[in-house]
Length: 162
Image (tube, rainbow, N blue to C red; front, side, top):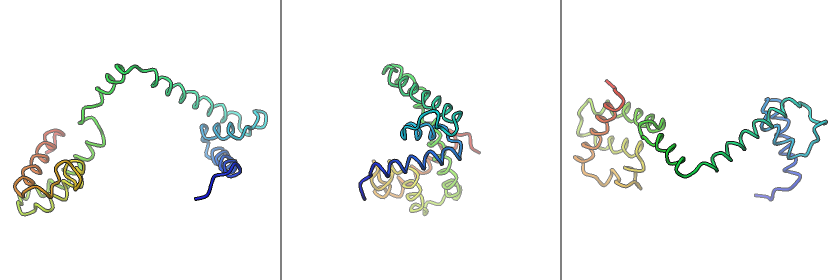
């Protein structure tokens, strides 16, 4: 990988400026204009530039605001969101696991342990994956079946699934 040069940076920002201008990306246009040092009287779309400047200033204010937030405020605001049922990615993961696992659960097929291990490992890798806290491949068939059934039952109850 070669070294970046001043000319390649200029070209990159010229491309950013032109692309942002054609797409109406105000923030990108503002940043490119500032990096290139183009004077205000030579700016092609002054309204887009000013909109980008406002977006940039709001972005800076948000960063400063978050830096000023005390650790107590941070912990209070984090506590509101730390309920694992409110995190969309966990809900999505749980529902996908339920979608795939419910069919196996309904069959009540105790012989499908390998399939259950695979699903546990795939959807809960930090817990049941090969490098997880409790790798499913180290568990007995009976334990895998109990864990699997428990997750299906709890997901059904948690999200009011029928």
